Length: 272
Image: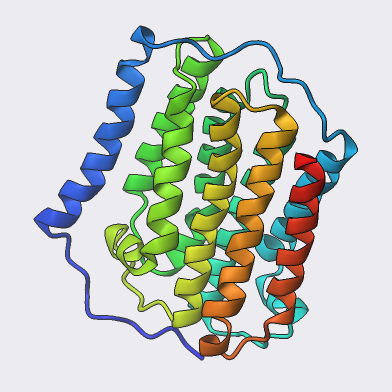
């Protein structure tokens, strides 16, 4: 099926203001960072050991499959999806899964600062998907520049550890809970299918997984504890999709429920 085109989307003052407000928020956080406590330089103690490597690897492998073969990844969950916007948004899920896996596998000494570069790379890798639905690239280019600068600022020890936490969680929550709003905010001209919007929502969920990990580390949790809570969020999101979205999209529930069970087991093991 071909992508259905919506009527031409014109930038209105509210849309421009919302995008600029988010950009200015990031700039304000960066400019105020010198007055805040620098990033911790000592890695937190690891209790999870190999479990963390396995867990990060699972998310990373899933992300690679979603990004490289979105149609094949749908088939792996017994879904025959060919609609273009759904495939494009599945690539977004893959990109942010790869980003989350990279954050989860990073040494805690500089993971907050490093995560800004991870986010910049994820945004860059999603540019073709956004372009396929008619979204302009200017806002993405601005975010990439800001995140690259924040990463350098953090590596120099001048960035408060809560800045990347806020960026991952706030942006993740926006995409997860308001996918249509997010698509409109970035001026997608193609009408995104219900499955596409669901995948856009899941991409935000992966940002929230990484943000949870960073947030618990910033709050003083051990690496294993932070990892466990991040995987718990991953499990909750998988269960939520299975129980609240799968049926309406004509999708089987066993795949996401399996993810929920695996995530719960990994979370339990990491936290105990």
